[in-house]
Image (tube, rainbow, N blue to C red; front, side, top):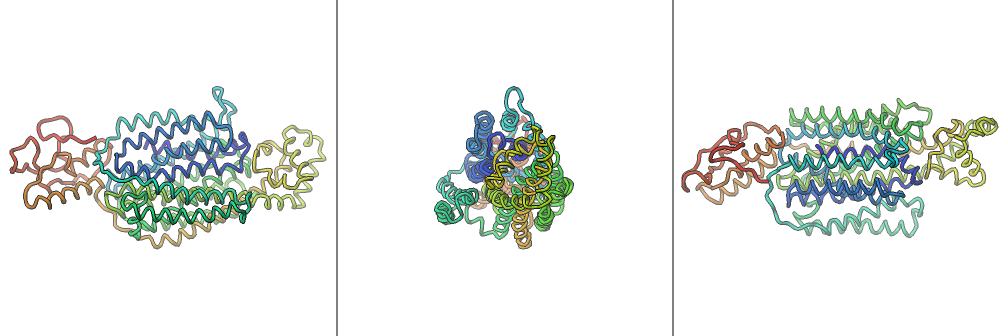
Amino acid sequence: MAGMFLAALDQTIVGTSMRTIADDLSGLDQQAWVTTAYLIMSTISTPIYGKLSDIFGRRPLYIIAITIFLVGSLLAGAFAHSMIELAGYRAIQGLGAGGLMSLALTIMGDILAPRERAKYQGYFLAVFGVSSVIGPLLGGVLSGANEILGVTGWRWIFLINLPIGIVAMLIVIAFLHIPHTKRTVRIDWWGAATIILAVVPILLVAEQGRDWGWGSWGAILCYVLAPIGIVSFILVERMMGDDALVPLKLFRSPTFSVATVLGVLVGFGMFGAMMTIPNYLQIATGATPTQAGLLMIPMVLGIMVSSIVSGQIIARTGKYKIFPILGTGFLSAAFLYLSFVSADKGVIYVMVGMLVVGLGLGQLMQTLTIASQNSVGPRDIGVATSGATFFRSIGGTLGTAVVFSVLFDRLPDALRSSFSDPDTVAGIQSAFQDPTIASDPANSAIIGILQQGQSDPSAIGNALNGDTSFLNGANEAFTKPFVEGWASASATVFLVSLGVVLVAFVLSFFLKATPLRAKSALEEAHAERAAAAGSGAGSGHVSLDDDEEPGVEAQLVADRMGALLAPDVTTSSVPVQRPDAAPAGSAAPSRHASDAPVDGGASGEAHPRH
């Protein structure tokens, strides 16, 4: 939970601060790079962490992920002086963040049975929800301050990760001890390279297409490279077999396949909403960063409530098919509702839409992960979890690039339409003629843009691409056309998101919800090894150490991690001969898992691996 809190806080704290950061670094239209750089690296590294953790263990990889994340946070907070530099440092953050979320969910898959997992993932998502409440508010407070301890306020958005990350690191070192069986497999570096070749050109053309021209040579090159990357990735994954970043055998399961596509579509809608709404609140409604953070609370509450309730229901009933349908239905309704947003609609209108978005996301985030984990064997829990996170991040990365591309592509036309309204023009002319308004220093910047627009109309169309601080405190007559233009462009973005989640809604009816297993991955893995050992030894007894007993080891892990495993796990399926027991041939009596001595004691003591 400590690592998940760190990653979730970083995702949510930046959203409400991005306008302030972009104004300071003069690049609001470049903010997509800051977001997508983070998402690209976290997306690519997610399956690598899953594979490496299957080989070397969860604990060392978790520590490495936190360390990389903290280095990126330090660089972003202390050394970023342009949006491009910030994007580069955010990429380093993303390289670490790729392991924080996925490894937390993988560890749950190791020690908890799927039915219990649903309940605990609800708690994990509640942590995500709490950080989502704190993040936007904290981001608004920090970015709203000019300086804190001599450092520009928004830089603390990244520097604050350092003390939190150190605490998380200490918790992981002290308490995260999971038994691990080392396996020697190949690392799919070619898979990582080809997925970069597939994803980056798509993001480049989505972000730069409006500047290059959709038929330019740069755009055409991206159109060619992306399919080559996709085909190459599939071929490499086929050759790598079980060692692939995303083993293709996972897609033999209809449940995993449908859940994966749903994850891509849901990721698109989720990041589209989370990145568009904070900017809308600040530009279209005039909210400060702090106020925008508070206004995001309805969406966070929706995520918390629906994730916890759905998790409890899944844990008690073992059924989850209804939640992807309800979740995508809520998302579709929310984006349809938000597509009617306009400058004359109040903040309450937007808050209602955010609440419905949250209610939909909370039912989807954990359910799709559970479906993916439950569709594979215990050996593939790590790669299935990271694969599910990987494809959801792909959707989020594409969603961020596409929605900002649509937003800024639509914005010039929306602004021209706003400035052509007779009432708006009359209001601007009246304000110009008022000496008090014309001489107000708060209006000087926006008056300069309006005057420049008379000789160069493109100045109006590009006015919101860079520094938008000229809107702060300016007269309403001057700001009205800019606000209306931004609201109109945002409504188009919500329509695009609606189209995507409607596809997800239809697809959710085809998700085959297989019954949730009653054993954790550790229990199943040890049961398989025990069965294999038993069949190899024929009818004779098999000599195993105490920590090879599935029930004993699972209980030890549960005790250390605070998990509530089913108390009726038995270890009597395989006769056990302990090292200090009688000579070979006399089997020691089997024990119930709950009877196994865990603390210090006499002979027969179970010693967990670390």
